[in-house]
Image (tube, rainbow, N blue to C red; front, side, top):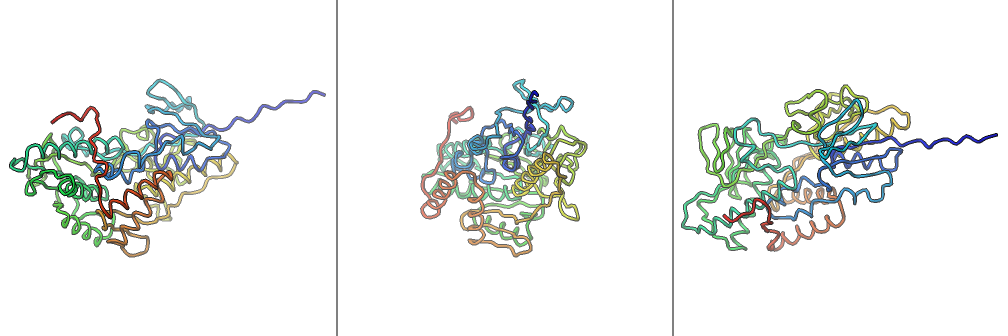
Length: 429
C-alpha cells in the first residue's frame, strides 16, 4: 500500500505596515505562532517617539532613541522585515504595493502606519513650520536651532534682530519642546559662551485652548504654565495661528511675530498615510473605523491599530487617545486576535487599560496623572517620567546610554551632542 505524502501546511502570511509602537507590539504577540510575519517600514529602525524632543534640542543622540527592527526580532524564526514605502493596497489580490514596484502578499493585514502632523489648512504652515514626528524631523530641527544660534552669535549682541522661537501647540509635545529649548538656550550661553541678546531672545508658546495640557486636570496645566514662565517661556493662550511665513507668523488677534523657528506641535492626522485609503474615517483627523476586535469596518482580514485607528474601549465605547500606551496595547491585542483566528477561536473585544498620562517641562519638573489618582508633579513626577521612559525604551544599550546621559546632565550638564550634522540644510548662514 502506497503511503500518502501530505504537503506541509503553509503558514498564514501576516503583513504589518509600520514599525512604531503598535506594529512592534503586534509582531511581538505573533512571535512563535503559525503566522509568517513581515513588517514593512520605510525606516529600518523603531523610534521611541516620546524622546524626539530631546534629540531636537541636543539632549540625546538620534541613535539613543532608535533601534534596528531586525535586531528586535533577531531570534524570531517566523519574522521577516522589508525596507520600503507602502503606496497602496490591492484588496482583490491581497497584496501590499511598494513604491519600488514590489508586491507583498498577505492573508492578514495590520495597518500600524501612525499619524503625521496636522496643519489645519493654515497657509504656509506645512512649508515653513517644523514638525516633530520622526527622527528626521528631530535631526533637522536640531540643525536649524543650532545654526540659528550660531548665526545670532556671529551677528553679536549689538544686533537688534529678534530671536524668537515659537512653539505652536500647548499639549505635552509643545510643553516639552518649549521647556527643552529654554534649557538649550541657557546652556548655550552658560557653557558654550554664545553671545545672545537676552532681551531679544524669546520662546513663545501659542495655543488656541484656554489652558495648557487640556488632557490633564486644570491644576496640571496651571503648574506647567507656571514652570514655563519661570523658564522664560511666554505662553499665549486663546490664540490661533492664521498664517506662517518664512521668518514670521500671524496670530488670530492680528499680532505679527518674527520667528527664527516655528515648531509645529498642534496635532496629528491620519490623512496622507496608508490608513487613509481604508474604509471610513470616524474622527476629524482621519482615524479609521474599527470594530471591537480592531478589524477595520468592512474588512474581515484587515486590522488597524495605534494612531491609525479610532480605537473604542469600555462599556461606554469611549475613543481612546493617540498615545503610546494605546498603541502598544492595541498592537498586542491585534496580534493575539490573529492568533485566535489561526487556532479557530473567536476574537475578543479590545479593552484599553488606562495607566495614566505624563509630560515633562524640564529638569525636576513634570506632571503625571494616574488613573483614579492625584496629579503628581515636581521632582516626584519627573522621576516617575524618567523611570517609565527607560522601561519602555527598546534595547539595553539605549537604556544604559540614556540613563548615563540623563544622570550626567542632571549633576553637571556637560557639552552634550550639540552637533550641526552635515546635510542638505546645513549651509553657511
